[in-house]
Length: 402
Image (cartoon, rainbow, N blue to C red; front, top):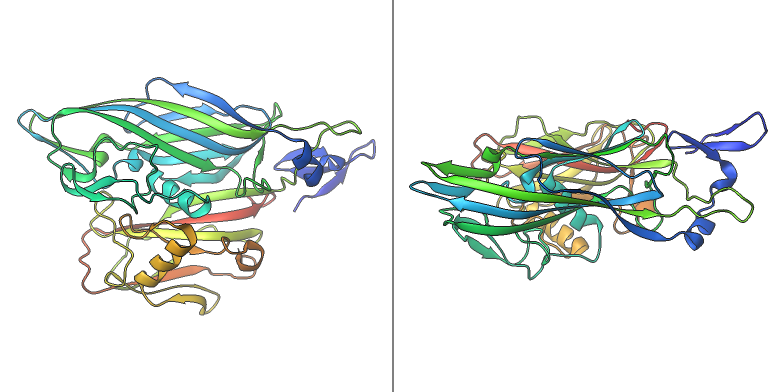
């Protein structure tokens, strides 16, 4: 996917993510033997921009970036007074409406909500799982106890439960972690970003949700959030070549993780959604989605056979390579792959084309055109202002990334 050119000195070069480098520098095996992994502090934000606002951070121009870690921590101070304080089902990971990562003019690399990023992180990064991590969801505070399926790790703290009512007065500790996978694969570094040049332009935007999307206050109740943000990056040093110059892996591809809203026509029965942004040079690795039957702040629709009938993905005229009998079957398939019940409490379903063997199972969008997926919502489900979003995880040739 890299295009070779020649300079006036007859020194062949290749274009890597829009940057010209000597062709002789591209040596994945030698790079892996000489590089060193580093965990670097990028920025500490002592006070986050605030609900509904955005924090912008320029990434360090050093090494090859494979991951970005974000920690949001601090306290929530709840004062009900004569009113009440409740959380919506968007709390807590939905405090981030969108993580957006851009690199060298490629604006469509990472664009995903906090909840969906957590789900896809558990889907793509073994061996982490949320089993035995107790959190509270729904009902009067503290809520109903769940010890799996909430997508949380033991090192995190929600402070207060998700979708709970009647939160008592108090100060609650919050500590949330997100991993932004710049590279698709942290071993081969497929999709990692070459950062060590003055011409590199890398930016992370963290867009926070409005307070009203996370908390519901009545009467004279108040809520005070005091959060700091820590941003780190995992980078790999660029070793020198014994013959002079540098050594780098093959960085001819970009990794993208994009969440898109589904058209607002969800109904009981079959729903067919065509994927946005299809094109030649794209390999689809995973496709995830979830339905929120009562709107974006409401309880996710659990992925089970009571709520969902047949589920499938299709391409071309009507070719359907994979069919799942109902939501329970897809939920079971995902739990087998990830050791996490992503479909139970939080309602995610994932078509996975890469966990078993990506070279065989990934979907080539140049050959499998008109990609879409279909799911049947059973008649027992009550839909009021339903919402749905879907996530595409793809490898894109540098020349066609957008």
